[in-house]
Amino acid sequence: MSIVVGVDCGTQGTKVVLVDTTDSSVLAESSAAHELISGSNGKREQNPIWWVDAMVCAFHQVVDKANIDPKQIDAIGISGQQHGFVALDSDGNVIRNAKLWCDTETAPENAELLALIGGECGSIDKLGLRIETGYTASKILWMKNHEPENFAKLAHILLPHDYLNYWLTGEFSADYGDASGTGLFDVRNRCWDYHTCSLIDPTDRLFNSLPPLNSSEQSAGIVVGEAKAKLGLRDNVVVSSGGGDNMMGAIGTGNVKNGIITMSLGTSGTIYTFSDKPVELKHPSIANFCSSSNGWLPLICTMNVTSATTLVQELLSMNLTEFNNSLSNSKIGSGNISFLQFFNGERVPALPNGTASIHGLDSSNFNRDNLVRAVVEGATYGLRYGLDLLRDAGISIEQIRLIGGGSKSEQWRQIIADTMNAEVICPENGEAGALGAAIQAYWALSGEIDFNIIEQLVLLDENSRTLPIPKNVDLNDSAYRRYIETLGSQYPELMVEV
Image 1: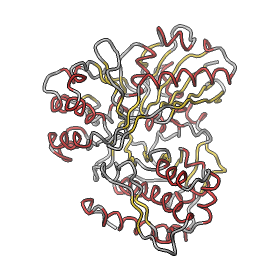
Image 2: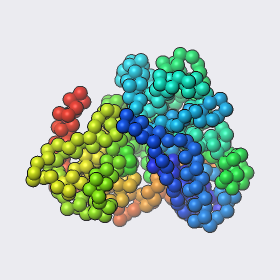
Image 3: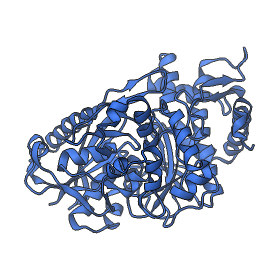
């Protein structure tokens, strides 16, 4: 029997799954929550030790649930929230709290760096994508500008999943997929970009702080020291290269061949698909990342999905059942209300300083059901905006595999199918990032990518299969166009097309 562990370190918590690869079964799952440091200026930070503590807690819960001895475990894979900046000194100690993917405090630094690299065209020419506010590069420049004493201590730069790998193995490493979201990485040639690093720090110190790179089937090392003792593992437990949560989510949803789209309705929203070659960027909002299955992963990210719907749910003092019932009672178009749901700024469309606003309210449509549907439609239409960019780039869409908390809502699944005019289905195991990490851990045992294990472990829930309803497609299309008109009038700099 070969037992592997998959860990997904997200913004809200860390999830752990235990997988028996002999009979392709998930033995148990567990999770532990994280705190979040936030500020009205866009600050979003966490202490990396919180991730370690949550992983250890969830790990012990999961082995207890499965009633196994931790010494039976052969390998561990780590999935982590992308873009976070973990700064370490020369002794490997954390210098300050990690700035997260959703931190927009660094927007001025991103604009500064984008100008230095030659704007959108220069960024795409050098790196294969446009540097965004959420990426790691602007966080490093922010530290240099605002905390020079901390910048002077900087010796190692890691992403969240890299840091957990470091805690497990004592080795510094990164993988191509997560590295491609730093803004310091040449996506086409799969290497760190010295020129971009030199724009932030003209010395070689920043470039030399970046870790060695691993491909998807490689091991990052074996579990040692404190980690081995705290987890109760045997000798020589392999740690895979790991990857960003979206890269691992692609593996965990079987999104490793052309034509499949994974869409996540989580705190943020993401849409991504596998490509066997870099995508020609017709629009710079497409993040032309590498995948963690040795291909590419063109991706769109929006920052306000369940984070926005939860705010409305809490404002109206509704539980989840009441919220979904209200969604069922409302009509497509929300009584002509358009909800621009940019509570946390926005990445696609590129509005790091955007704010939320509600348009079209009058005495006849101002009711609870319309507000509920309007925020769900706003989050969905933001994703439709991104999906249309992928379609315009020539990406074909045969099926949307839906994950994240919002995917559990039958009503929201239908709205997605109707708005995107595509078949929607959910994997049976919704913990796609953790499952993808477990699958990659299995690859690390042999040093080879095995797609058969994906087919055996990634099962689709036929009860969730949702097809678009033609009349709803037309109604949603009209409501979406009104949303786009409102977006264009509120933010004319976007020059959106209806």
